[in-house]
Amino acid sequence: MNKGVERLFMVGLPALLLSCAHAVEIHVATTGVDANAGTAAAPLRTIQRAADLAQPGDTITVHAGTYRERVNPPRGGESDAKRIVYQAAPGEKVEIKGSEVVRNWERVKGDVWKVTLPNSFFGSFNPYSDLIYGDWFGAKKRQHHTGAVYLNGEWLVEAASIGELLDPEAKPKGKEELRSTSSARPGARDDLKWFALVNTDRTTIWAQFKGVDPNKEEVEINARRTVFYPDMPGRNYITVRGFALRHAATPWAPPTSEQVGLIGTHWSRGWIIEENDISHSVCTAITLGKYGDEWDNQSADSAEGYVKTIERGFANGWNKATVGHHVVRNNTIAHCEQAGIVGSLGAVFSTVTANTIHDIHVRRLFGGAEMAGIKFHGAIDTEISRNHIHSSCLGIWLDWMAQGTRVMANLLHDNGEDLFTEVNHGPILVANNIFLSARNLASNSRGAAYVHNLFAGAVVQNLLDRRLTPFLKPHTTEVVALHENPPGDHRFYNNVFVGRGDMSTFDRAVLPMQADGNVFFKGTKPCKQESAPQLHATFDPDAHLVEKDGATYLALTLPADWSGVRTRPLVTTDLLGKTAISQVSFEQSDGQPLRVDTDYFGRSRNVANPTPGPFEALGTGTLNLKIRE
Image 1 (cartoon, rainbow, N blue to C red):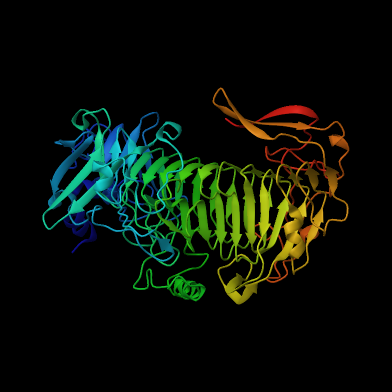
Image 2: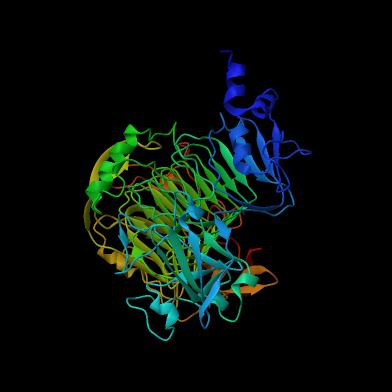
């Protein structure tokens, strides 16, 4: 059969016509019909139909409205120059939701209502019988489901039993204290709960609706596992731009299993996820993660199990030519109970920049070891920069094989902890960041350089960790060897410590340390390896954030002799040397020498005597620095 005729039979005449032109723009609108041609005058109705038709080089433009569907792109682009672009029409609000609106609620008692739905409503996937489970997951002695209930866009809390709804004065079992209130957290109703039961043919959901009739409000429930996610690996060079992506019944995403997010790349290469508003994923918003296989969640929560995962990753194409190279930028990510962005092996050679991430794992109904604003295993040559992460259990967690990783010019505050580096051998560059939480750094790694940061909280160095973890050939995924994790082999240059920063935790380092040009204000303490620390033992800069006219300012006061502070000359590859265990130089991802020659704002630094901390040439006295628009 002729190829053109064969394609006509496979996907229909519209696809054949669209393939004849180069770089076709396919339009989707809520007024469209999927039998249409997909032009601006005759748009399609669903994004999935457009995805089925789109070929490399095409753009799918989606017009204003709410689309309740899961987009499963059947193919990707061919290169960075010939990608498939999914975009919201400029200036138009487009929501893609994994939820459905439900009506016909019946009052049960007081503020408790219920609705009963046939299981056919959910098709082959029912979130209300879908349990959250997996490696490194802690259920806290109760069940958790991937379902959710939303009242006017704000999600309610899953109760452990129907009794919690019918008897609101009863205290729940287990540690289920919520960390904040709905008034302080737009997007969540922590004061309202839901519970569901599923039998052979129907699903019943009970929910609290205080003071409102749910049949007169917008009440939605999760109906889909994901919103934008390919069902197979290798769908490369896809752009997703400008959408509001919400409401996904996502599973737990440990590093040893397929990582399904509200939106995810599924073991592909070259995605761009930008300028989206992503929220309300039961587990994770964005996944740059692993494929799935029969070994999913079979690691016995062990380091040895993850080593086997890495070995299988090689057999499934874990290399620089196949996986990673993603760009995640300018997104807002919120209300996820596992992670904002997660990636095991699949985030290599990627850039994650200028995102705002908040309200991550704040309910604490379940536990585990995979929760953070950003949680990466294998962040090889990955840049994490200019992100604003707050109100999260943990800001950035770099776990295993962070080598060539650059954490630069991020703002982190009001987190349980800002940065955790776990069992890495480096090099890791942490430069020009503003760390303002009560606990800034937990280091269970070596081979890191902390340069020109502002530390306003505690820092902790863990002792020997005997787990054997990999280090790699530079700028590749090729494992050289495994090594245990002794403390030390860090470089601290030209940082500013205020508040609770006690560097004496590094006095116990086993491997050599380098420290010079750091400034210590009231309440902080240098480590013994720094021979001439700059001490201001009685001066308190009172560093804190101020919100004004939609912008974020850092307020602080500097002493009159600030301009005379001595620092280490410009930090470069030559100064930082090689890491002790991996024996790798601190350098750019392309192998070129590294120079920390700009500040938080991108301004050039003084080469001979750069200003300590994230900002160059600050001046003295009381300052208010606009750090976020």
